[in-house]
Image (cartoon, rainbow, N blue to C red):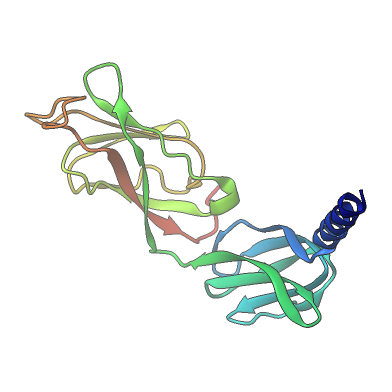
Length: 213
């Protein structure tokens, strides 16, 4: 009986210490991709003493409350780190990278293909607003080896191989895309020896200019 009570006491102490241990409960930068000079909001919830760091360094970091948020306007791609501290030592940490763009930066938009039910392929990339924020499109380009039909926010573009279009200029990158393509000679869906591509992609040239009316 004494042995059982001793074990229960040890377990209770262990659970109590673990519950009080410093911990990063949540840490988020929103959005995680911005144009130069645009803000992102970094928010956190931490158990224990809390330190917020940035590389490269930015104003507003250092010792912070255990929960809160702060808006940062960035000129360079920045990695934020939140640390839960105890006795001056790290006990838990997490990182969030915020990528900073300028007009002209090229980024792929892609997703896995599936049969479209009409003998061709379709992919549905959905870049998240939490990641892309208000970054807009300058041009889109086709780097696949086949004609692509691209639909985004009510606009439709036919992109030949190597083709570029300005038809989606000014639209946000985020949201649902639909990329359609036909099969090339010899390609057979569900035939591993003659399979079509596993993904379809376009390349977006981003714009950081003010949105046109």
